[in-house]
Image (cartoon, rainbow, N blue to C red):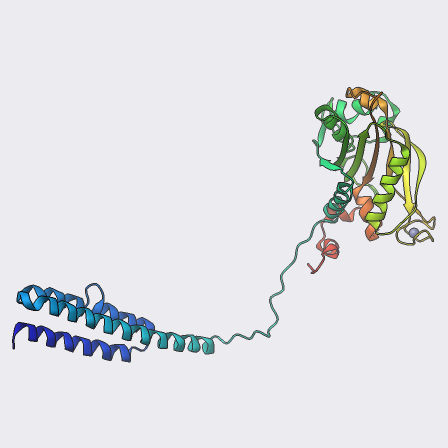
Amino acid sequence: MSQIQVAQSKLETLKKEALEKIQAAPSSQALYQVKVEYWGKSGHVTEIMKEMAALPKEDKPGFGKLVNEVKQALEEAYVKAEDGLKVKEIEARMQSEELDLTLPGVPRAVGSEHPVSSVTNEIVAILGRLGYSLRQGPLIESDFYNFEALNIPKNHPARDMQDTFFVDQTHVLRTHTSPIQVHVYQSEKPPLRLIGTGAVFRCDSDISHLPHFHQIEGICVDEKVSMADLKGTISFFVKEFFGASLAVRFRPSFFPFTEPSAEVDCQCPICKGNGCSLCKQSGWIEIGGCGLVNPKVFEQSNIDTSKWQGFAFGFGIERMAIIKYGITDIRLFPENDLRFLGQFVTGGAL
Ligand SMILES: [Zn+2]
């Protein structure tokens, strides 16, 4: 036999062996090993190309072509066998890993917003539709921002209305959110519609008072602002927040930073004014305080009182949540008992 015949016969034998092994491969992994062994980088068929060097020059192109044809035939057989094996393997896996889609899933604990957060967000969203936007301020305030600038000078009896935590001689944990407006007056120019909200602190603790609670207030500063505008704003807010047209009434009151001042009552959202335990059978429920901004407050911040007027109103967030959800004890808010918080989850349970 000539050299070329020997090489061709060797190639034929390799091809036959490889095809048999492809057919017999029991898994796609075993099949891949056949590929590596025969026509991989250092497989038998690839290696045979080296023998070309010894062939007569005229036989070289023909033999090269033949090797490529064999490789191609093996690759085609490989792809076909691989498809078949993969289908079989998936079927086998599906049978061995029985998946019952009708089994109930693993329940997941769904978190929820704290009612203080959700009520805050709701109030901010309602007032946002009237053009009010949110501001925040520091929790520790100087005496000036917490008292002086809000028309509560030293030795003023109104300071006793707010049982204050003192940080040092001149700083307090803010007793209300009203200092926020003072910061705004110093950095922004009227007209203004702002919401101040956040935590406030007072030395007070019983079934209806917490030493750490939350307030929200709205301030409108413009050229012509009246009690009628204030009442209209609060009526709109009550309707949106409680989801019903409830009557609103003002009772004269006193706050150093507003003049005139009023307490705001709305018809009890539970009994709609007929009398129930929440409203102590009166049909009315107190929701907050309000008034026209005292010009002395504007003067402290150099706002021209001959041009600008304002109204302010404020609510306790916990109190609004108590009224809205019929909560009986304000101390439930900071306890973070999941049995309490879980009642405010929408679309799931804790
Ligand atoms: Zn009632």
